[in-house]
Image (cartoon, rainbow over all chains, first blue to last red; front, side, top):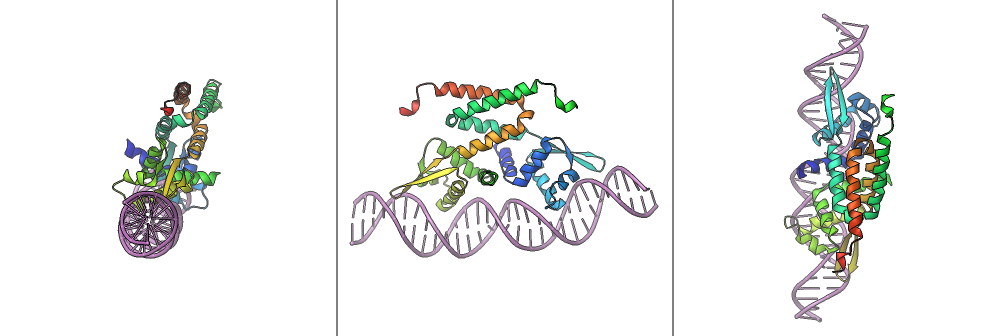
Length: 118
Length: 118
DNA sequence: TTTATATGTTACCAATTAGTCACGTATTTA
DNA sequence: TAAATACGTGACTAATTGGTAACATATAAA
């Protein structure tokens, strides 16, 4: 488990990879679609980053014919968040109350009619 | 700001550095005390990690004579936590409710007589 | 069937990183 | 004052990493 999270930390250490995760938050994308978002990088460079994310279990890739659909897996992120919040909770009780507000807003948002059906 | 957090992400990507932060959670330590906790590393190796943590603003170091006292700065960690929670809140509303519980426990803990005076 | 599209793999390179070593300075202790 | 303690800095090395190039396979479209 701890070894797994080491890969996750390493994967998250690169800003390009964090940006890729940001893209995937909006929904799954083909590799080409992701490559297009990084015109300053070759497609091999982008794919290399995807490899790292995949090995860290942050991204799942499935095939649709010749296309590869990449989607986000938030579980490792969640594990890191939860473990770190536990670790540092004594330091930022006030900030955790802030997190509580965020959580409540998110829960309230969750109960609204979902826009994702539109 | 985003650049600052890039340094933080990079600093957190190494397990030894995360362990150093774990040590400092219990309170400030001299450099030597930290070095002792990593018998598999030379003191230069440990100090190099401390340099990285310092540049990422995760550790503050002050001098007391010939001793250097290193202490944890949780602000960058908090910033990362908060920003990531915002980013991924739609994905884990249920887990955020869990975070809410943690936050409430921490707040309740905070109101007890502090054991730190003992 | 041929051509186009989507992606993969290996090799290579420059930069960065994690670690050690040699030499050094500053402060404290005996 | 000399010796011990605590830490610093630059140089070096091997490994890793972020990136590109060359060559390739698989699938879809014409």
